[in-house]
Length: 406
Image (tube, rainbow, N blue to C red; front, top):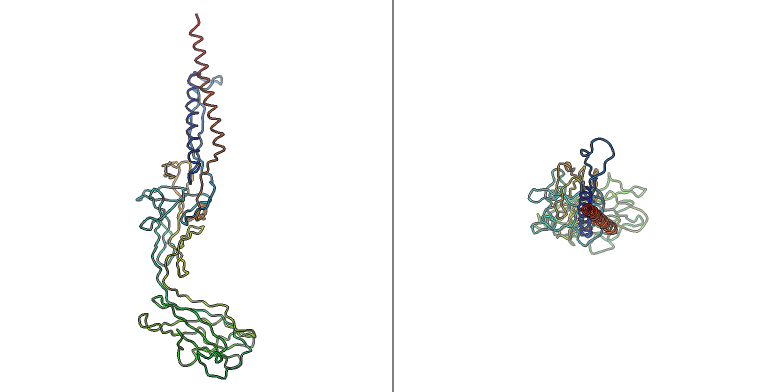
């Protein structure tokens, strides 16, 4: 019987060394998870019947389970690299065949799909042309690298303080005569083709708490007279009922862009206090054509494209999958796992929802292998192998002694 015990111990120790060796080999593999050999004793009860005065006949490897604990996160120079901080797996598709991974080393292929080193595509929730995420069934994530179309300016907002100490100028209003108005400010607006135009507003005091507003577009006065007027109360705040707000300004943009373009300018935040002329807000909703400048990924998995015109637009959201029993997943190699009946069905959702972790962009999750612990385990497994070999040798010596009896 001791031969069987020793041989089973040798086999179990050898398999344990295989597991340890695999852990050590993958100590620098991104997203790799360490494994653990789980031993079980072996008894042959039928040889002895009932009772408790029997001994075991060896050892067996009951299971080899991977440990899905969190690995350290290290930064990289690739903005498409992603690390999961918490539970979950990236959901990959290879022509419809789904696999799962913790390795977040991604790149763009020639068609704009986010892929891993094996060519499998990262899946997630796509965005429409306006950047709205379409939550539902995940699909292959594809990033658009083309230019973003321009948007014509239709609204603007202005917040200016007019100096209450100003008096009515004696000279008639003229764009070229700075003494004919009490303050001016300008903004860039865009036509339907993304061409930039400069709109300037000029403010001229016309009496106690009243002002005229003149305008110019690309250096040419708009209209022959004031395009609006402003009235303020004794507290210096705008009286909207007697003021032109929003100011509807017709800007000539050329025949190619439609001739004229109307912009509604909100002047409701104008004030008249006894301080110098100052501009505190100047916004408008148009922009020129933008070239792709780069991508960024938020903790909730939203992929934002950044453009040279200062705009950002969502191009999709990464989907994560979690399992009730991750140890039931089938390892496929290449840092990928497959769903099995033991793992349960995947629970798919956006990062930072439910039990799913958050994403860290420009980073990867390192292997969770503790190299120091593995080297100590290797020494222990080696000693166990040597001890089991010694039991076989001792049993051989006992048998040899019996054979030599005369």
